[in-house]
Image (cartoon, rainbow, N blue to C red; front, side, top):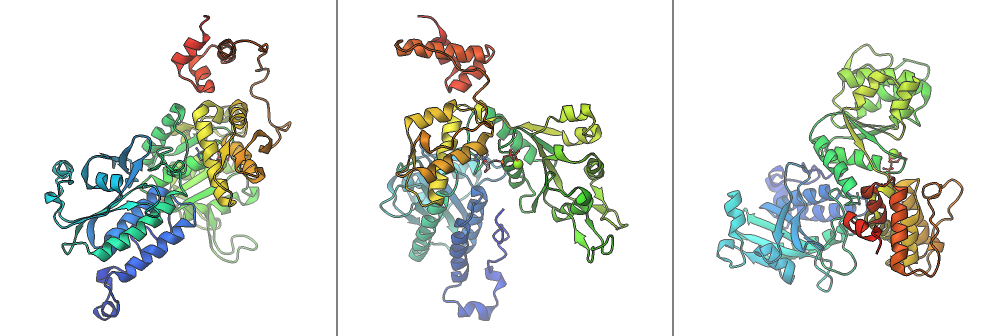
Length: 516
Ligand SMILES: Nc1ncnc2c1ncn2[C@@H]1O[C@H](COP(=O)(O)OP(=O)(O)OP(=O)(O)O)[C@@H](O)[C@H]1O
Ligand SMILES: [Mg+2]
């Protein structure tokens, strides 16, 4: 979450919070909140932000600073060519969509003109349907395009409704334009960035900072969204580097605990003899060196989410200590008598085969059932298909090019093929390292196979013995057929898996494997 700028907006002096004398000394009654909004946005930009959180915070603050009833951030969806409002953080608030040829927002998105009116209903561009559907009565409107400058592409529209004192001023419009430019720069740091110089942004997935739109990820997103609506314990499973940590955060950020803390406990780094005190804290004098009372992670996560990472690596003894917490949400500090109640949501993750661990007697079966309430399997990178792999590669390339001050990156065809043919046993994390390396080692922004790290022994080749010999000199169509058939064979005849690996549809696969 974004510290210091939650919807409560602790650092924003509200109008009612100012004494008469104080407000008299300000040149403009909203000047200080306007300045603090600019400063806050600037500081948010320097971090990796959760975009939805940033947007809803920005809307809340805008509403306060510009004294109006509603603030909406519309983005142009470059692929669907319509407007989408991404302010909804909570799953129960639906995403709003608006055609580009409709409404005042649509007009601003198309033309880049600012619209400022005191009576929207008499404006021919006004879309009365939305008001009719929602029962909302729009009076004054101020809408400006989201873009860095007049000569750069439009990414969306910032729209304010119903000034509390009747009309938006010209100064309001100028201020909003400055803010829109800042927001535009913020978008560039997120997964909702533009693609090249075309207008709008690309929605690379329903969660910010999580890239991927494959069907297999669709199931994951759906489960994450549903789980986030409840306090149920979640177990994220998947190979190393698949993004379990990222999804754990997504559950928290989209839950009603989003304003609370997100505390990670990594079982692999917990000192074995200090597990209990790390988790539950200790009282002063409870052991040598305990010279003051210390809160454990569970207490630090109060009101928020406790993420138990690599839970499969927890020692058998420590597992027992966790059980009570999961069962009754009750615990005691080391050396303490009082039983404390934990108001935490628990999310766990592991890459281990827990069933085997239970069979082997190294993982407690009672804990196993407790943590498996909602199980979410995060797929391997290579099972996500070509589109996701390339989209992720581009995402990391942009990210590292920006971080290292390199120009706009692009991949050669050979680099693309290599990315698609490699197995990536280290999944997304390994892909990320490949791309980081390539960005650093490329002289001109063109990412070539030789810029990728050397495949070392550690990296297994894509599936054992999965190479196929195709003689040179065949017509390309025949090569395609042989290669496709071999992939299908190697996927155990499963068309869905084979199609996914090849990055084509099942119908195309069927067509290609047919003998002429
Ligand atoms: N879908 C994704 N979109 C963008 N970045 C991703 C995605 N999945 C993973 N990453 C990035 O890949 C890296 C590895 O992800 P993460 O640490 O969440 O994996 P993990 O499953 O927790 O791995 P491990 O089991 O090794 O802890 C991180 O830098 C993360 O930001
Ligand atoms: Mg992890």
